[in-house]
Length: 333
Image (cartoon, one colour):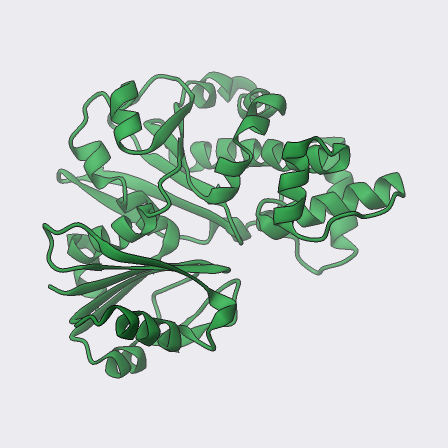
């Protein structure tokens, strides 16, 4: 099969190689998107560096993937599928939404485990039980998480397989749930024409919230990047910690809203490095309180188990699964 797989977000690109369907993904490499002019330069560099022969490509992309022309939502890369395939000299190319791939990365997790909340099963699949609950078998799974943007997708179970529903849920309107968040929305609305959820729930979202608190408190800004603010929050800096906790509480509202919209009562899986890094602050914030703040639908949302993935290569696994998934057969170029 000689399949090149990639998981490409707004900031980073991860590449891997699978000889055939039964093989493990190997030659895993991690690149910064800013280091390459465009995706073809990164792909060709990866192939040359590892001296690979590539017949097929399956790319997990942070952005819409239906058209021949693909523009990344949060970085400068863009490409046409037919032109990239010609440059690589391969036989086929598949591009899928990054969070659809994240969901498909859990194929073996759901396929092989009836009791997937078992501690050993979770550990084997690099998952942490953030919140226990009741599994509703004939239901859907919500896959979501903040990164450079906000990823949202839904997994359906159909004919003994997984069917991922792709979308751009991170770009829906930010819906404030408290007076503080209403004030935050007003502050952001003065600076931009449209305020999507990922402007408060992503790396730049953390920066936006931090800057809002700095302006509100009329104090000096010490940090300028999400990495700096996140680390400062972990180290106990008050404004950084308040910003991170507010982002996590907004995330709870986003999760609850999407559970209601998609009927995802089997479980929620949170993906992405930001949530893993800020893991302890989930428990210091009002995350769990905000999850169930849904009036008469409190129980509907509150009983859903929530898992946190710390598998950095799950997107690569999902890209490979997508290539073999019947749902994507007619989407391969």
